[in-house]
Length: 307
Ligand SMILES: [Zn+2]
Picture 1 (cartoon, rainbow, N blue to C red):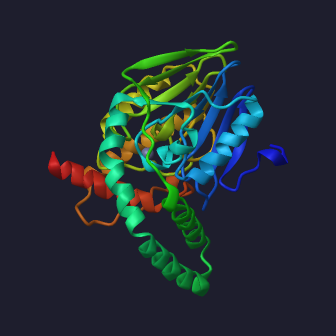
Picture 2 (cartoon, protein in one colour):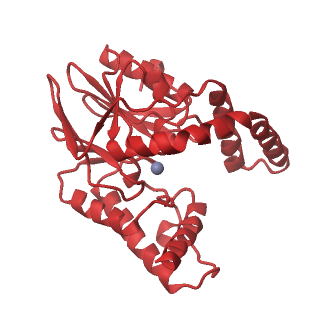
């Protein structure tokens, strides 16, 4: 991408004509990926990152490329790194599934106000990490410090902006050049996960149902079985480019890897004892965020315990 499309928060990649992926950079204000699609006479943005500053860059780059302000903005699910840039798009129509809207409304207000009240605590924490960093110069620590600094920069002016429009199963946007479909098959990674499909180019924006070359993260509400079930249904679609919530643009092969990963980790969590240490299997050794593996195991063990 040329200079005018550069952002410190993400790399912009043209997947095909009019379809763009904004891939989060480490230590930036994005955290998750986002993207946008030019329908010919309308623009759709998919997800709004973790901070306003990253969303500002996305907004201005999308405007430069499409020559119009964004008409529609989709929130794939309620997690902060996909919605906290919403306020930048206040003049667009923000859309999510009904359940995602409800969860955003229920969970974010208290969380955000707590964070706003503890900006000094965040600063102190960053200082303590900086001290550690001067001792060992660890690159992952540097990323964490930069990520927290972006959070700190966003908090004073951060406002929760909820979607203005919600849908239940699917909706189709008809543009002058192409139509795209927004849909959900329920929740797997989160309470409800939305996807955006561009049939002409066989591009599927998958939000956090897909992680490419990095460990998919399970949350309290994640349902590994439903997640696998959704991915298997998606596997029957025509997909050339599968765009994840985290990691680079992938393909159907990456979708299948996540199916295998979830199936395997479910078995391991079941067959090992609580507190037993487990190593990341060698085939996932090169995946990013290896610490997520242990977190996932613990969450699954907890889930098994509750069943
Ligand atoms: Zn998520």
